[in-house]
Length: 231
Image (cartoon, rainbow, N blue to C red; front, side, top):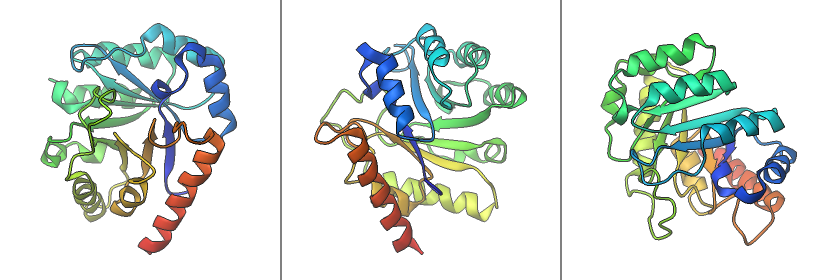
C-alpha cells in the first residue's frame, strides 16, 4: 500500500508449517516479512533462530525486515547480513556501539533501523537519525506479546507524533515503524499520528475471526480512511 507499508510478523503465523504460512503471505502481496530474533536475555522469548531464518531465505524472495532483540547485536547483524536480509533494526538500549552497528549494516547496502523500547526517549536519536532508514517504536514491552492483557502504552500515539515532527522539521527520510498491539482498533490512529510501517500480528492480520485476505482488506480500508482524513 502506497504510503504505509505492511509487515506481517512471521512469529504470529503457523510455526509448525512455516513453508505454507510464508507462501500464503506471499500471495497477499505485502511489503515485508517481519522477523523477530530474541535471545532470551534481552527479553524472555526465543521464537526463531538463525538457522530457521536461513531456511526461510531458501523458500521465499520476500523482503526480510528483521528486528533484533539481543544483548549481542553485532553477532546477529553479521549473521543476518550473510543470510541476505533487506532491513535490520537493533535496539538502542542494548548497544554499546550504536554508530558502529549502523555503519556495519549500511556498508552492506541493507536498510538500517534503530528500535526503541516504549519508555526510551526520542532524544537518543539526536545524532544518529540522519543515518537511519527507519525507527522502530515499540508500543508494548518487547518480547511480552504472549501477555494478552498487555495494552499499548498510553503515550504511543504521542511518541509517534513527536518523532514525525522531528523527522519533518529536519527534512529527513527516515520512516516510522510501529510494533506491539497494532490492532484493527488502533491502526487508524497510528496512521494518523504518522506511522509509515505497521508490524501486523495476532490482533490484526492474523486475527482468527477472518481469513488473512479478509483481514488485509480491512486493514487497507482503515489505512485509506485514515490517510484521507489526515489531508
